[in-house]
Image (tube, rainbow, N blue to C red; front, side, top):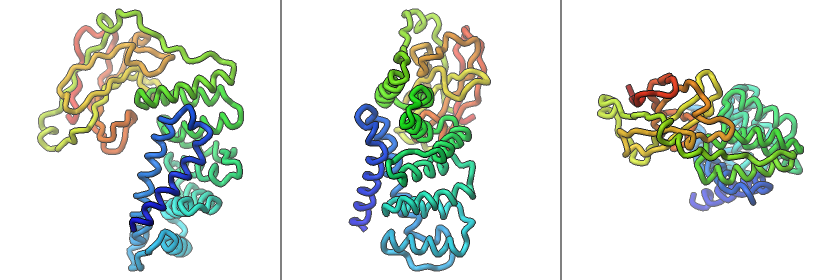
Length: 335
């Protein structure tokens, strides 16, 4: 068991390294973030394919190796090929075994059955790149990534891979535009690495580097938007919160794109607290809080620490605010 886990981990690392090597030099933070996600999925994959009952309740002998699991999955899918998650698992298993072409084909069958799942679409696009002789995202892979982003505009891996695909074809301006919204979703260290990639793409496209506007000192005090955040007492009494949970205070343009115009990250241990949002909290260099007349505010309790909403996250009721606000805005999580 220990030997298998080690081998599976090494295979996953090799896969990530091959795909992300062209951008490793200047975007290590982003590449490492994607690598962590893929390594976590490796453990989940083994738990699922290592227990064929996840696909079928009939008794089957538990496979001793990943190869045995693949044989059982193939037999199950031959019996009933309408299982999208089965084809997805088989695609992951083939990928771990280094059978890139088979992985690509299995993912294609999964997508045919589940065509609107952004995670699946992204994985299918990645499988096509891994199966390509030059590790390129072909036109079909690009289409899959665009469909993933259409289904979920804030999907980080889909945007990252689409930007890579656009860079591979020399469409550098499009790559920069694809990556720019990610700056609002990642942490400061990753944003620094990502900004280098965006500026490199813009330079290759003949465009100037992104300009990070420095506020002229006043907005932090006079124009700051005060937001009081608290937990609903009944909710707090029912739920045991993890000490490493995160609270995001987010301001968005009403009826605008999902990316925030200002966001502040705090620890759950800080609750209750008062956040102060201003232009310094604006992650997008092209849009600042002070440029808006209205914003929608929401406070999100996140167990994952990721800015975009995940399953299980708890949000306050959104509040629409006219700027500048004379009084602090109150947000209650769990009410």
